[in-house]
Image 1 (tube, rainbow, N blue to C red):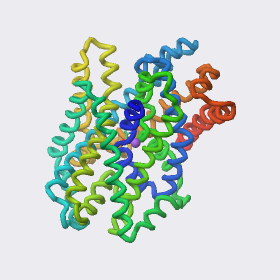
Image 2: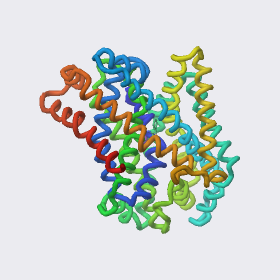
Image 3: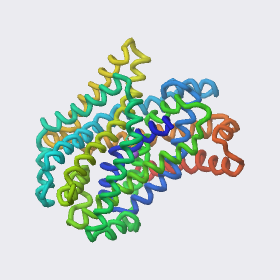
Image 4: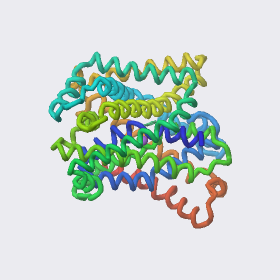
Length: 434
Ligand code: PHE
Ligand code: NA
């Protein structure tokens, strides 16, 4: 139970409520959603299980685990790179994740002080634009979010947070469902549903494929060694496939509910679905400003969203800290500070992308987009590919069959997925983009 909670805490976060809806909007709707769901089922689930399995066998940090398992099975030690890319990706992701966590905290204040009450879409959009244009303010919220993350990891109280999430996650889910209910009153519910689930396949191209694949990794916290690290605490008694079903189901439900809460508001108000990273921050406040009890609901929503973001951000910081702790003379607190402050500093360049440095670009991408692109669309799929290839081709397979408690048919399906479909899927999407 504790394990499933921790894994769900890492998985459910800004990826579901902030990132998923705006990526859907930027990719043109249902074609992205359906490809994303296929990626989750055929690639995400096998890789999640593979990471847990590798972690449980190795019982160490991702780099050492990969190195040790490779050695035991007589393979090259460069497999440790799979763990290495993952830790680096976690480092880079947290830098911009914390910026958005900061937005969420800022919106707790705004909701609480009634800033949304009676505002129309123009005013809410302008307020968000104004917020982005004030780097000092973004800096303050990013710093607060990162300080909270650092404090929790340094004090080693993540467990307490997990126990809290048992109550708070369902509460967040409940508010989302209320918002979906609000969407049903806007008159644009049907439009939103068809936007999300009725695909226009002409919108599907290599870019959309890569975005869907990358987001499947991001949302399930895959390819970062995080799930591998969690696996290292797992006892033999845990049924991996059943645990994966729970985590993936929860994650998917949160994402789809977020979509069904946000898009009715988008269409009812004639907003731009492709507005980008601000989408959730300019849609939901419209609902909070116009429904009775919106003040309480809005405050609770952004509070719980910040909490969900925190359970994810501590899971991003943990592997970096553990690595530093093992490889240097630093104590846990020292390692947390060094890692946290470095990540915080990198995050500053990410938040400047929304204002002072918006024109600082590499390959057409600002620093924020670049960090996102490099991790989601490159490092995570690559590291995840390494994990699945290792588990499916390099581990002794009779023990895998036993570990997954599969019969002959189940194992045949697992073999098909893990050996062929998942790796070929990742390679195909990569190749498509080259
Ligand atoms: N999976 C988290 C989310 O969807 C983000 C995350 C990515 C957390 C990677 C940990 C590691 O918000
Ligand atoms: Na997620």
